[in-house]
Length: 318
Image 1 (cartoon, one colour):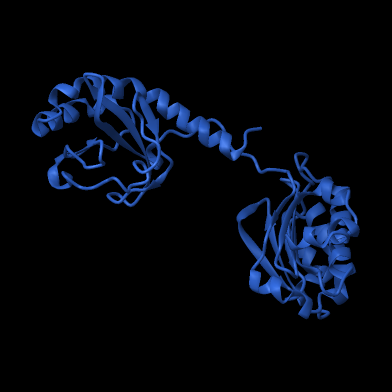
Image 2 (cartoon, helix red, strand yellow; image 1 turned 135 degrees about the vertical axis):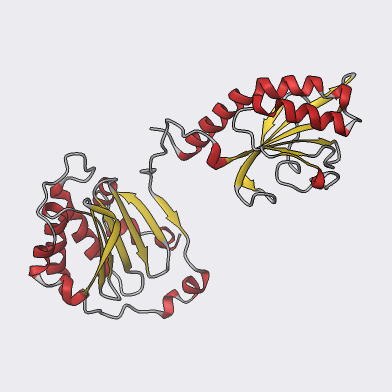
């Protein structure tokens, strides 16, 4: 399955393939007109439609000064001639001395939208004289057939340094939720296994749970401790078959919740503050008292014991 980086690369490669040839044709016509701004503007205006998805065409000299007008869907706009573009994200990195390159995505000063710029080298008598620039609004590009998938690798993120620096001055204060975790875990197991909840997040210290349903994934329900320990809460949720495509088995749900409970109580200084389980993507999220966060697959999570998290303090503090 493709990673986020692979999906982005594929989409940029598809754009490059679509525009490289028409930009090359234009770049070969421009040297003869390079000193004539009016003729350059006219050529770009006539040929802009040959560059798929293009929002804006213009020319730049080797120092980053815009030579031509902006050529847009509306026509020729000479208000931008002469502006210094040398500090723009597409110009202050690697520049092409032959052919074309695509920039990283950045925010356009003109449209205030995320865009990508293609720069094609323009040469005369084997001497680089400047660049043909084409801007593409990211929202105008066709959707890729690829979709990035969530990494299942264990990931760690450092927390707030202010929290980390005072970690050993803290001590876990038993919460109301702590007193009811056994019954809460059983109810959550029931809700996720039989009542259409695919994602839950447990806030141990503040005594609340957030739940997401298959039937209404764009909204979440927040329940107080009084609600989440009430066995009748299951009456408020529809009866649903456990999804066959869930990456967490129905039998694993309670095992994961119990492992979370263990991490809540195993140490009074380094302890679990909040945790989440998503049965569809198979991921467990953990945030500890040091404010460090971990994301790990349910299978890997169940394969570890407390010594994995606390045997080397750096693992939890990371």
